[in-house]
Length: 153
Image 1 (cartoon, helix red, strand yellow):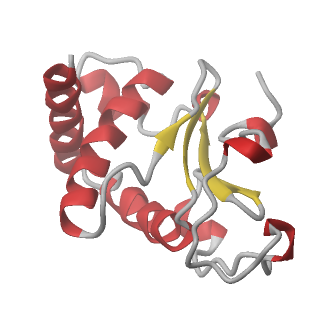
Image 2 (cartoon, rainbow, N blue to C red):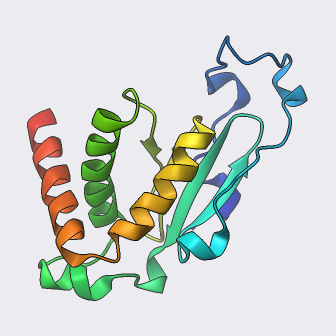
C-alpha cells in the first residue's frame, strides 16, 4: 500500500496548468478552501495535492457498504468502487460540468478518485457520500458504470 498522499499524485510536469488561473508559478496558488467537512463524507477522506489537485480516498479495509456490494454479488473492492463511481461520474459530467474531470488511482487497499477541479471534487464527494446511503442508488450507479465501461471496450 502506498502512503495516502501518493494516491492521485503526479509529477509536477504531468499536471495541466489552467490558463485562467492567475497564479504563476503554481506554488504561489493560495491553499485550497474546502467547504466539505470531513464528518460529512466519512469514511471517505481528502488528500490535498496543492497546488494542483485533490484526491478522495476510501480504505477498502473499512468495508464501507460491504453488505450492499455483497447483495449485488460483489466484494466491495477498489474495482467495484471504481465501477460504481464511473456511473456516478457519468451522470455528474452530464449534469454539472465537462468530461475528464475525474481520474482513478486505486489499488487493492485504497479506492482513489482525484481531480484538478477542486470545487467539483468537493461537491462531488458530498453527493457521492449521500448516494451511498441509498442501496437503490448504489445499485443504479454500479449498473450505469458497468454499462459505460462495457461500451468503452
